[in-house]
Amino acid sequence: MKFTTITSNRDYQRIYHRGRSLVSPVLVTYALKNKKNNLRIGITTSKKVGKAVRRNRSRRVIRAALYNIGADQSAPYDIIFVARTRTSFVKSYEVEKYMREHLTQLGILR
Figure 1 (cartoon, rainbow, N blue to C red):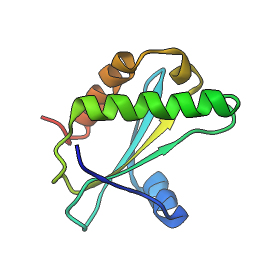
Figure 2 (figure 1 turned 135 degrees about the vertical axis):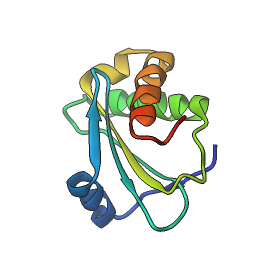
Figure 3 (figure 1 turned 45 degrees about the vertical axis):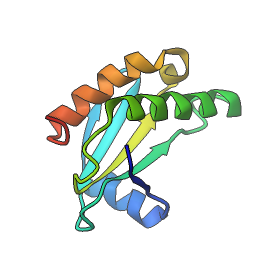
Figure 4 (figure 1 turned 180 degrees about the vertical axis):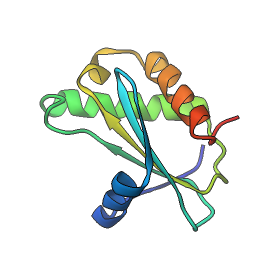
């Protein structure tokens, strides 16, 4: 799956405030339509998740789940995935299950 990453803090703040959010035990998803006609992804982990090893594992698990889903890259959305404390302790297929539910509810996946 091909996508670009969200890099500016301004974009993150805009998506947090204006976007729709869905919560699960291992993942929080924020999504907002964009005008760029491409899929942009951001992954965040706070220090509440744990030390650096746990935060990096959380990001890796989220990224692996995202690649397994293979969302439509032409979808004009900005999506932020926020890791929760349990994210680093679960396998990527469990995160993928919740991610698929979120993206389907948001209308990004069919």
